[in-house]
Length: 314
Image 1 (cartoon, rainbow, N blue to C red):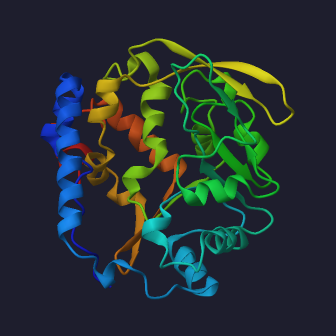
Image 2 (cartoon, rainbow, N blue to C red):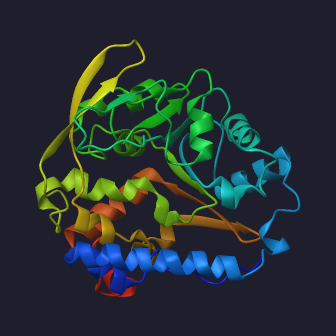
Image 3 (spheres, helix red, strand yellow):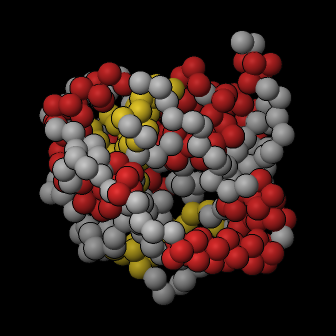
């Protein structure tokens, strides 16, 4: 089946430049855009095509994931959007169940489950058992599933399976959210994979591993505000303080991993079901490529780079 036309980037480049260099102007521009979208939505009638007419059964979805390269026993980090992926399964619970059944008892499933919490609020407490995930409905349902554990970090990850404890154990010791002790980097160590369902491959959180593993050697100074301390209530009820870096506002606004995808096409596997994108990438190959590119000065916070053909000698 032919792939849909390429997606536009998450924000136009001019807006990202504003976010990086003129944050107050960025805020005004975003508000104007949001107001325009609201007005346009009020004027445009809803379309029937926006609503799903059916869903795949578990066997069909399992076959699609197998075709992408997901195998029983894999350690799999999953990024998702139920709004976009709801044609793939009758419910978020069914989607999660299908993925876990495909992985089998020897497989490990992980998802980002960072909370809606400000790192700058000294009174806030992140409760691993109760604080909802802001990474989407599917991640929140997975987090609440019996047998799922959650890492003690502001950029929390939830996991279930034989490798779950190993992936999560040291996250609170990592001041860099995606550093060498994080579940994201450890996924590469154990030969895991990253699955994106209903979101583009640019939503893979491992893109941040480059800046967090290289630290001071990363080409852009994305951490400008020092360490923030988050109070976290663990599953046993004890409260610990976890220091971690948060990306500076201007770097957060101008990040666009979509510009990195042309450099990663040969390691990404993609399929489309209608207009729903699914992709899988081996975490170790993905991380190796990201680090190589970062050392050449190519990263998701910049704007003008050499062509992928020139960089990769294609």
